[in-house]
Image 1 (cartoon, rainbow, N blue to C red):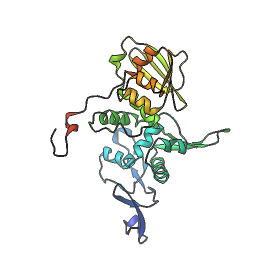
Image 2: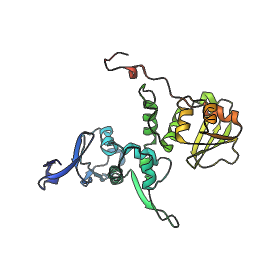
Image 3: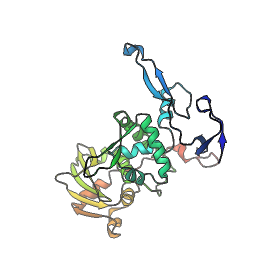
Image 4: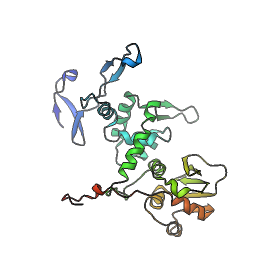
Length: 280
């Protein structure tokens, strides 16, 4: 157990702190300070906007630094990633965050909620369970997640053997789809992953991949996230997975095979191949 005195806002003697990634922050303390920011000249009259000051901040006026104050903690952006396809219960949310403890996820959810990125609500009966979802402002982070995904996909050290959740894989497939491979190929597929249905529709070389079921699929594909990852991002052949019993295809197998070949990791960036001695 460590203890220390903190700034004037929390001067109550020694307090408990916890450490994430080697950085200490007060244990169980939520952002609570309210600050007013005047509206810009373009917005007309001055508008006061409350902002909850994070306990740990860069202290930098740059909006990018402020964004990292809000969503830069470990697991925060991955929580956003897990909510991009729709609301989730806590247990479902935790299932896609391999390695994160329940306490850490709870803390991050409280932080994101206090920043206006995430909200929670209770579903009506018969479900009557509490779910977390992105706010309208929080959903604007989808473009950030997609660009980070595409950037990270160009690393030579990407850990393809590490676990990857269903929602993360669907977002990866959306981001790494190759329109050039879909020219002249209009089709619909029903994709089942761990008993969750997704529709994959290709029209005019554009991909729609989302939760749900298409009306008239050319094939129904049933598999798990790990197998699908190997097929789409790992270059494994469909025949190998079929013979291993890891996937089933009902309908046009040739069309399904072509569809699965429309996703590929890009060539690694040359600088990402640098070894420990700095040599490429």
